[in-house]
Length: 212
Image 1 (cartoon, rainbow, N blue to C red):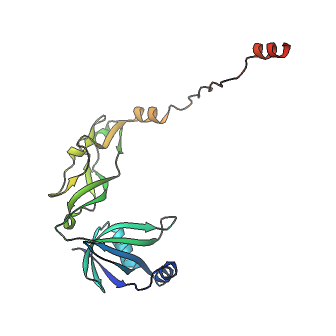
Image 2 (image 1 turned 45 degrees about the vertical axis):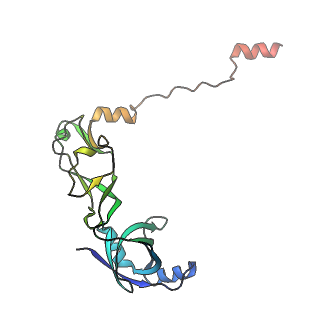
Image 3 (image 1 turned 90 degrees about the vertical axis):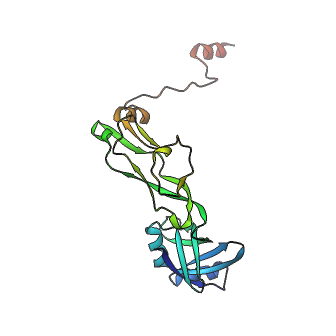
């Protein structure tokens, strides 16, 4: 069941009007797409935050507007604590769309018991799928992963109709040995080489220069 957002049409526009919307506990939004006119909306703050928390992308708008829309963009405050604005694109449930979804590691890798560390290389991936079948996340199951092994794009199991927009050989997650991890971070206690200073005179050159 899709999330429902109550939408009210905003007739006033501009920075002052937007501030009034936010002070009233609502979030300004715009609905566009499918060759129809853009509509300025006001959405309930608590409903929008609940949808974002659950990772929902597709929503049903009810109220002054009745439509199905995809959350295309969310504008956040400076510290990422408050939603300032939402962009909504009209879609049909069967329409194929491209969206970015998070990757979640599932399971305990065999390599973890071998002294390795599982590292998520890609935290988010872009997928193409029907709007009604947008996954909340992509699962990377690492149970059979040994040290030195990885899961690539082609190894990820996807729901029917969902396609990863990545090269099949793109690494999603891998298991590396702790020694390799330390080497990549830099060995502790290593001294940095003194950089060569171009144009610096040696002592003999300086004395020679003083005599001339």
